[in-house]
Image 1: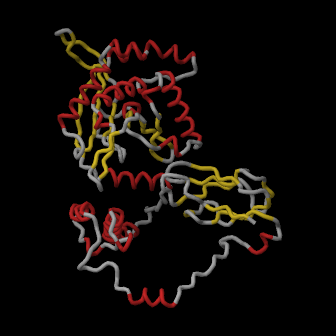
Image 2 (image 1 turned 90 degrees about the vertical axis):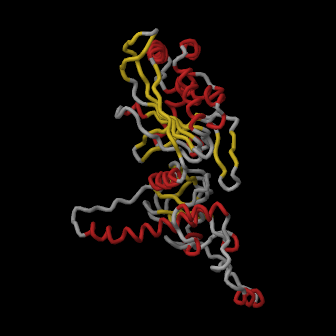
Image 3 (image 1 turned 60 degrees about the vertical axis):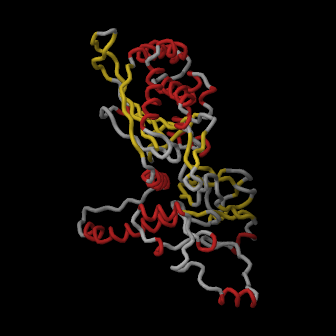
Length: 405
């Protein structure tokens, strides 16, 4: 008999949601046959059968599982007769030696009010969040308090404060509680992390007249190749050139060591809307790819996102992120949220017909508003202006754009 356990599929994922079983309880299956679709924080993964045999499902469809939980058993009818839904394989009992047990009983509590084990950065975080660190229970080695412990405590306190309001809401019949999906939970956690970044925003307007002309000219050619060409690949290429000149924007910040991690690769993420929440698809080593290759890859990743076949590897390890707010229409300018742990994010908005100064005269041209949200611990406002000017210069340079086209 063989157990099928839910394992860490990458990125430190600890739980999943059984979205759908692809086999029936008691069915004869082959080795490597898809058994279940499990939704994680990042993607929907298909779990295969470890061996051939009869399958005995151990959890219900629609339930949540954690790493180490048994999803199903596989074997012969005789082997499976002793297992049932919710039962797990017997584990050997852990017997403590008398001396060990005595030492544990005699040992003083690890964490005392007089001796709080926490790094200076963790203590500062507690002060910033107006939290008394002595009330936080540490889960690290020897009871050490981590940033996660502080944030979890703050979240629990906020939840307690919200209960009276929730009870007031529940007095109304119109209230409905909707469970959050794994993806939505992940988005919520990432937004909480992003909220801890002390950020500032630089905004500017780009004369996109030449850009508009190049895309309009090249779009029919791309369509003949089966590629939908948009402004985004051009913006990506301009951003990469600007990142090479302003390398601190292509980095992340290690708060514990207080070091900036400069990245010598260009994995550009794009915020993409899916029916179950916002995702980030990533063009890996984008600096080594041509315009049509980037447009084709973006098209393929979006299709995978729609089909829920996208992998975790295709949505992680960004060095810089772009969000195309303009594709949805909407307002003139907005403040994008930094994609943690990136240092910055570029927001591009809808191109509009607006007055511009050209050759000393005012004319109507195509204007692209941009906004750059950046981590002020790593870069300053003057650097953000230079970075923005660099992006702007490439997007307004006819020779650069024609070379890309």
